[in-house]
Length: 236
Image (cartoon, rainbow, N blue to C red; front, side, top):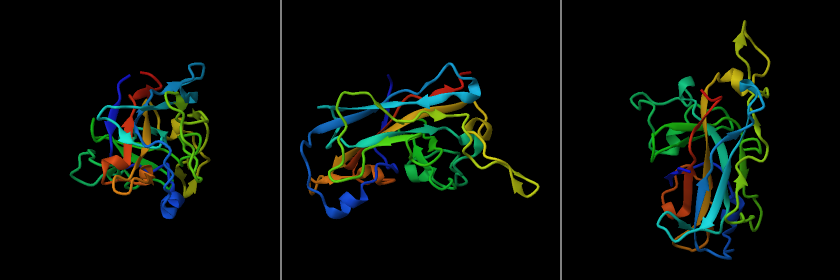
């Protein structure tokens, strides 16, 4: 399946404690790559009730499209919400981005934005916190868990239900209505995709580095970010 790759920053897979401690744990720091699968949804539900899941895979690679890595990282579901003016973009940008930080302006607390810098240059948004409904990441402990290679891992361990009330409703006569589902808050069709990230090794110290927690990391060896193919839900 087609994969669009970029090595810009991303905000998930945070291992701040490990970085602070300066871990030197490094069982096998050979070159690896990460790939993002396509969006799948439950066809038995009504268009307003689709449940979304995605996947990612890590494998050893000798290609130039790989980085030294211990095999930690993860993935999240993201949506194209540009039609709803999310995120807010600075005037003159024409809703085009070059890095992830361009896509985080005006987002709700806990949301994250990602730039498809090597493709359409459009922003994609994780519409919520990085919980199991939207993400699947390496657990933060010493040492962090390493993903089994050449295995299809879910990008979200709990399917994301588009009909579940979760977003603050609209203001009516000074009062906010009840929680709305994604489908009501953002009427479709909406494009979705998987964004996956692989942590790298610091080329100077040869130590594990949690590059996936950085929005715009400077060195491409520190992280590898890829985006899976977009899929419109509900289908047109």
